[in-house]
Image (cartoon, rainbow, N blue to C red; front, side):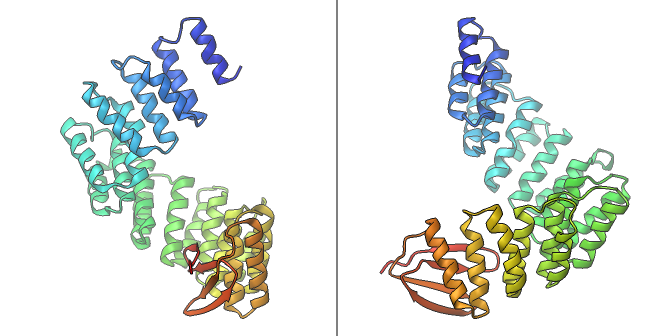
Length: 359
């Protein structure tokens, strides 16, 4: 019996008005990515109970509808409903989705006035929100205000990830070491966060030491995310052969993310040989992902292999990324070449943009 059949059965049995049935239907449709149907059910529910509100807010977050969640939360307050802990756990990620600092600060003030910030899970969510908004000072202030005995692995992971994501690798590593000294055992997510921080801060030795620490001291089997971080770490620093050796020794088939990290490093260091090996795998795993062809075109252009670069552009056109405009530009570092009847491909180390020039 699929979801709609179950819904129809509930209507025939006159169970639709039961709050638990309503809540289950809201949750079911949202998790099936049919938020429109989820909201239709919600509109018919009693607005005097928090459970349906919690379900629809969680549904918004599941479908990454942050603005809708914020609007519904405000409507909930207008209706005179008092949010409980479950409401806030469901709803707070909305601010992290859009990284809206002003709204985050307003919510923070509300939580302080309501006395709800003492809940460790809610405090963790607020730290995460401020981190994603780039307001690390506020994130760390809340983190520091929580008693050490209440700082669990989730809170530590969030603050480490926050500093790492904004280029403060040294602080992220320092926090990781502080966490270990405090007797909190890191998990897979924590290691991913600190390895990512090392990668983006160029902390190669620290990253490799932490990878070994994860393997030897904690017997954590590296997941795809861990390998991606290590390949990126080695690749960014120019140790491409070591990065490739890591991939070849993986105990399972490397994902597109792992090969993508190697290809990205090959773009930075203009290594066509390894770039071709990574690209070959990516073309097999993601045949329709034009970004991989763009990166190979970037490498070929950088090393003067213009025919190969042109071939990559033909493939991009065949996939249908762009119809050929009047002019195109391939920019490689500080050099630019103007070509006729091809799409514009503008590639930097950290981003890919395909642009049309109108004439």
